[in-house]
Image 1: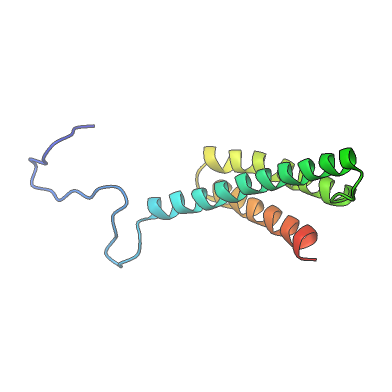
Image 2: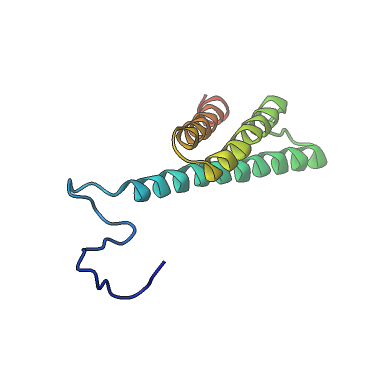
Length: 117
């Protein structure tokens, strides 16, 4: 790839540009989607560590912890979200989009079942 001014007389457009319709270029949307799903997967992993830490603290101190279903639910959700995000990061097109959707569904299920219910 050549860097510097374009001497051919053609107009060049950089990454993240806006196309003629005023909407963000597809690459920018893809990066945003991957960033969102990656953040959700990482957040779920962090929440899982907090729940497991609370369970260990509860066992050690004799107080009631989050419970077995909550612990295993978080572990299962993380076990789905992290590998699926790995797939989303390394593929393109419909496979990446579907993998990202699975991450969103896994995080939503864990939040719905163990935090809001």
